[in-house]
Length: 263
Image (tube, rainbow, N blue to C red):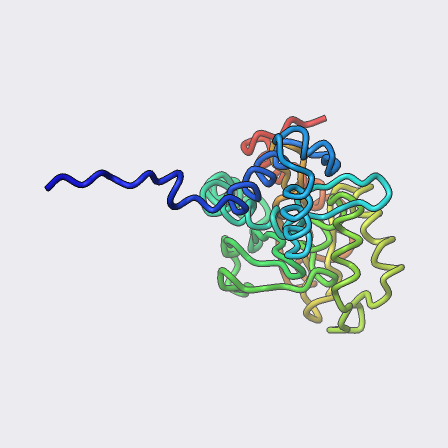
């Protein structure tokens, strides 16, 4: 006996889920965001349906709304999911040769990390050629305020996103050099953006210095950070500037491989 295959569209589709995915897909192409009215018109949704779907996505932190402009955009949570997916497929692959080249030039351990939520995560590392080195396992999380990875990415995020993250994090004191004032930390982020690289002056681990720079995707969005880490005796203050510029160039090489067009 022949059985007719079910109509997948009519029997298994979940209308509100489908509308939610359409909204997400639309906003993914609109970096500056859209108003609720623009979303409603573009997707030919009813006002009630659009309001319910968008409100739910905002409540679950997948979308965010600027109360001044009324523009709705993808949230950091949604962007993080996309970055995480893209990371596994491309960032490490595109970075590993550059990381090895940087290690060969400066001899120090090289780290690659991303921001997920209000923490950073180590994606990859290339160990120093020196006998004494800092080893960090892949997947290790790091605090944003005391690390070059956090400073690099936060300094280049859109202001609304960085402000939202800064509201959530606690500036825990790890060493005598840890920045614990949010005002001071914001000033530090301005300096990072001005210089093009960030430093960790023994702020996370006493006696360990780090220098890093941001990595951008094709849209100019800071998706990761590249940095070196070493004992302070091998990475003294008077080398911060020259090595910071070297690392920034290597980070730019990765960004270009990801599609970024240097200004």
